[in-house]
Length: 423
Image (tube, rainbow, N blue to C red; front, side, top):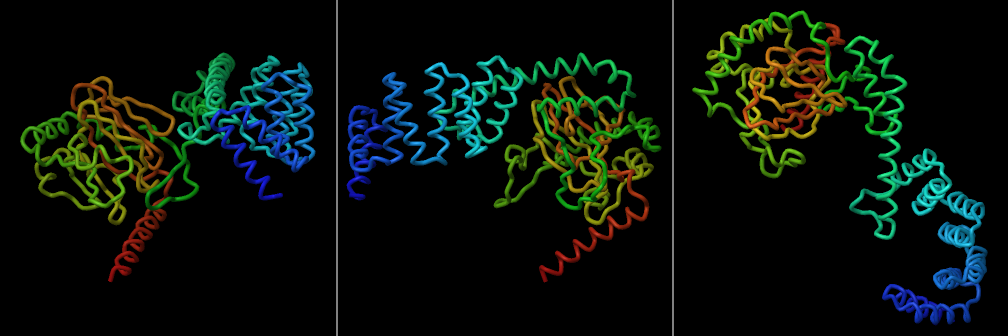
């Protein structure tokens, strides 16, 4: 008998997927005749009854299916649909809650809960439920087609909730935030964005050495660094040398991204070996590029007055970085949070911007930006003209002199270990 039941179940499923509903219902009835407590047959016959508008018959069949398979959340959710058709609001809610008690991550159940709350006028509670559903759902390209309309509705409702929450926060905290020192305001703008769910905290994520317990600060204030005024005062001379290099040594501006065949390029595919992002190197992985430095004596003198980071085979790095028109440097992370990266903007057309973590800044010629590049960051030149900045490395001011020595010692040990493994 089991073999006959299995064959009938398989045939009923094929008929349903082909849209032959009458054939499917007849086959499920045959299954039930042979196995009266077969949960799938009871469930399917209940759904057929519901589709015909026979809510009483559907309720009876689905309750029998639940008795036969009490842990199946889909059966309970379908009982909730019957209760909704019968106008039993509380009965529908009880069935949804019972389904989620069996599986708290049941996507269809979470969507049903959100829809129930929305129909009851509980918009904010519904938004939380929509958010929970989107959290457990797969990425949009992999959404189940049957649930896609509900998930798209969830996205819209969650955005409406975030807009409303953002406006409410701005009304309540806008005044106190403006009373803060200018440098502290960005922190609380980001806190509000995290609170409403528009962004997540940006943390330090180093490609090489991560120094734990350092604060992940996107942009540092220029006033923290004694060398900034002197450097900025030399902007004119640095711009002059940069322009001369652009004019006379264009070939020396080489692609910043140079992965070799077989290397995983990930987000760098479009810029790999591309002169759309090119650099004229002055120091490269702790080594001076003497020929370039000789042609840029004012720039060299300005950089030598800076407290540049010195880490074995990592830095200092210093370069003129040229970003071509309509070029985007995608989000990425740097090598270590022991050092910071500084930009002295030299040529900055309009429509250029820079993001580190949550915070966006615009380059201004002669005004240094200092940031932690271990935090996700990206750059854009959406203009029709070239953008050029002087980039160089400096120490994270949170490190003592002894800790700087530790950073250098750890990276030297790392290099020695790798070199020993290759011998």
